[in-house]
Image 1: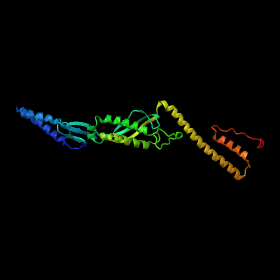
Image 2: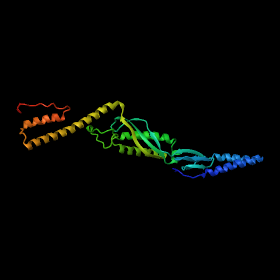
Image 3: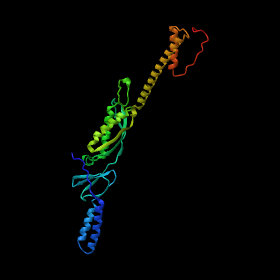
Image 4: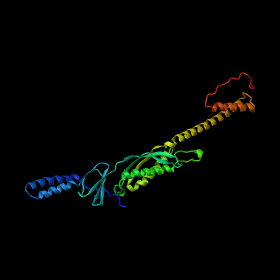
Length: 285
């Protein structure tokens, strides 16, 4: 495959001076009724087609009758062969925010996902000749890469189903972004495109399952919180029994210990504040 060829053409200001000189001399010769003046002016007009101005972070791909000549990637004012075809290719970083795509994750759940891509042209030859339209190529291949990435990872972990993946789309932001960037770069390398950054811009469950998944996440959070509360309550009850026994505050038999544990667990694990009851009689009443 032919690679990019960087060239440095003739300084445009020098040819501009020649152009002005030809116009002046051609006018003088023509005024003297000499036909050579006409050819001088025509030649000067032809020179004008060779002028090319390259802005910063831009380039010009030069083609002569279907043959690639080279690329100008240094900004300035130049002059090239007037018969060259000059195709402008921007070298600036471009930002692409894809549309929200509806795809299935690894577990088959429909999700909505989009990506933000920062890219630029690295090889002007590939961008100009190896693909039909490199900007459209970037959009199409980015969407394809996002679809593939979404099918490789689950949206979230669900330990109750046995799906305990290390990497998920929701929580593993850095790992997913690296995988996405690598996948897009492999697809865009054929067009001479360099991927500067790729990350997920939007991620959510599809509308038809969003409510159900939200309830599931809430239930998982409640179960985890209850588990933490029970662990704390058990340790507190254990500590209370140990302290009572150590300081010999009261002698409790097994039945009273069981009642005490039951009351403390109800108080510590309950959703509402406990209502204290004052016992004015004996422990048996």
